[in-house]
Length: 243
Image 1 (cartoon, rainbow, N blue to C red):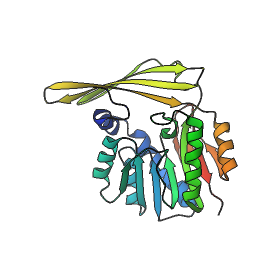
Image 2: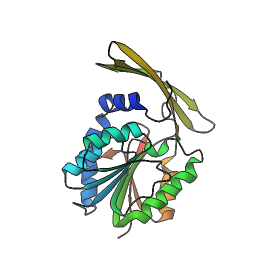
Image 3: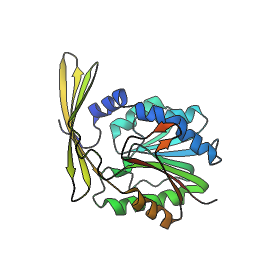
Image 4: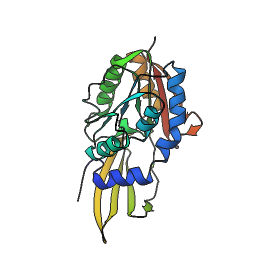
């Protein structure tokens, strides 16, 4: 079985075995939003995945609107956060409601599931975020940088009822990285095999900062969310709309 964007099995595996980033970054992300002056209100999470960060926000008194292109991820998020608002939609098409903060974590804005003209699509999303944010609002996201996984060998990870293999393919000409993912998930006494290919557009941090500043954001590049370090060749962006 081949699926394009976190189908049922990969969504389950990602939630089960790849949740360290969302859990680890959550306290630092919350601190950034609070430092912007917002202890309550709506936070929109683009590429919300299985809702781990959304649940943390709700537990700390915020309202959450989560968006993800994967219906399977949205199904998990809805079960995890019953009082959240979740939408299975393209990040490039979704009309962001007025809010106090927007997050897009885990390099989600780099994925090319539905955005072949990636840089223009990114600019479109940035403009929508800027319009949606209240004065003083904050936009927090991270990108994968040029060179990511250029020489990385295939990886393997397993859980009690699943296994995940990833092979990396680097395109120097287009500055893109493809992850060829094969999963095995136990169903009764057998294992079901699925596969997906995820392609990311890689960026130079300075180029993204320039786009954000042209729109009107004040931007800070970070390598940590609070005390939680980003992985190598990932750049975090804290972009504030002037108040």
